[in-house]
Image 1: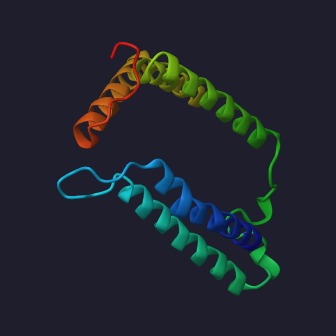
Image 2: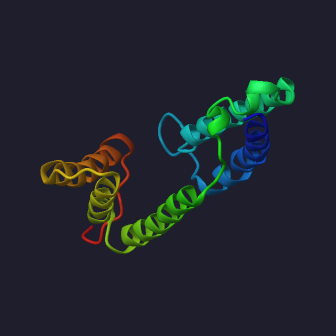
Image 3: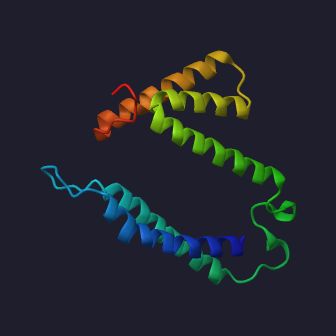
Length: 161
């Protein structure tokens, strides 16, 4: 895991720097409230925390030194196999599902598309009780949409608005 942590930290550091100094400032409007709190405050805090954690992870992995004996993989031990077909299939399913969800959100709206996505995810992971699927997949998008409105005054995309 030393190499994984080292390379992950080294990959995330420039991504976080890019987000902190260009992506977030270029895509967030200036503050317009009485308190002059920028809408980019929370994303900047989140990415700044990610940057600090990435630096710490890379530094710790670098200082740890090469693995010896039983330290080959501290998460899985001798069972570590790396990426296999199942992992790649799950990644492909995630990518296709995310693309479909994005297109549905843009063209249909948040609530109906997330209802379909949540129902599909629940079926995929093995939930078979129709009441659980119906309640979760219908109520959660409505609750999230209402929370986004009441907490952030942000409307989720919908064709009826």
